[in-house]
Image 1 (cartoon, helix red, strand yellow):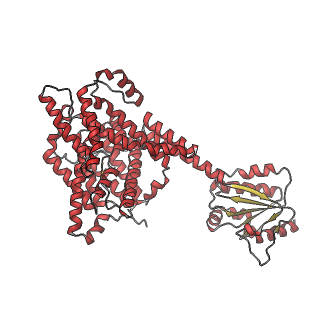
Image 2 (spheres, rainbow, N blue to C red):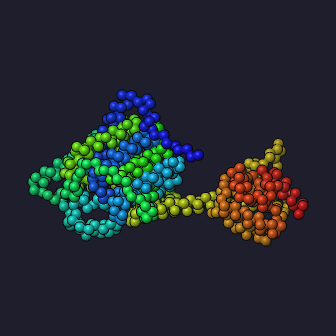
Image 3 (cartoon, rainbow, N blue to C red):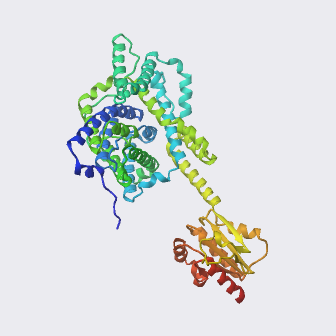
Length: 561
């Protein structure tokens, strides 16, 4: 029976909860809520949806991730990583398609957690993570150039190269006032932490630049576009509506669904792992995935977009004293209050200011220092990094993740194949370097009998290396032994191709009247070979626990022959 590893930290922390902890969570939650506000609006708009949908996502997903999550301090909501994906899905499938893909991604994330695949992050190579994260950062920056400088471009191309071509062709349409607002926003966000780390620079920039935009408008300068000029703002919570799913939509949206789920799993577990290091705690990865799944299941029902753990907001929570998931719940409540009572004021926020916020986000996502450091690694890792980066920027994240993982797997298999070695020993064996021998007081070199060859397999025996036997025997020429001993003491596992190769070796040897003896097979490999029926062909009497017994058996077979 399948046991589900679902143990939300929220309920554990309530057991010893007190007033002091609540006050720490309260202050942290309020600050994180204020920090999350401009980011939620910016991420929503950049993703191609209205600003309130970004806040609704932060409210709904932030609340659910804190209540059901496997981390004490994780803050969930919309993140920059999803901008490119969400924008692409909306362009191709519409808002309804995004809702279905997000809903299905939630189901997929829950399944990952239920099946205890929370360690999935360990199997994603670091160069791929750096490659697509940096690629997303570059792509986000590219999408914000128009608003940052107030360029007059009617139909902006969807692709990366097309966007930059349009920018260069239309850069003479720059609006100096919008550019001023955007550049000042970036400067304020960068300088604010040097004055106070507790005050979010993005919020300061939005307040000051909104005031500046209003002053400019009062003085007859109306070229600075605001949120209200582009969107109609609503402070009403949308009614719940479950997306319609059928086989056709599943088939059509399976690619975007898996991309949302995989990226959500990677980012949330990375965020939780970073938080663990900061608070000396350990998150439950399976519980975290289930919580992320629940959040993405519910978010589209209320018109929200994909959500995941947000590293920046999680660290803000920790740095401001957040102790338990209550801080995350308070952050969601804070956003809800702002949404209900202050949302109409958002229409005065300049688009150039939001572009400045996202430019800083994109710079932080690029992580150029980590990117540059990867070039000191092996060429194969650099190739995975560069390919993933270029595919993310030029094409899309779905292709980048798929191709990146395939390339990484192929390179990994090649490395394993290179690490596995098969050698032949035909004279004597040194007992001092052996681990599967019966040692005596006066160990001497074991002499291999005439007509016996000992083959040593060092490493996994799988499809990538199974043909090495043929290559090795081809190098030995036409000389044929009477007995072949195959030492498998250093073989951690064998796959079906390896078993097939061993079977062919036995059948070929039988035709040539050559006996096969196995030596030093570990329990795992032994069970695999037994289950496959290989031992029925070989004979149980030819399976030896160590090389001493194997050599004695080989000598006996030579004499019989």
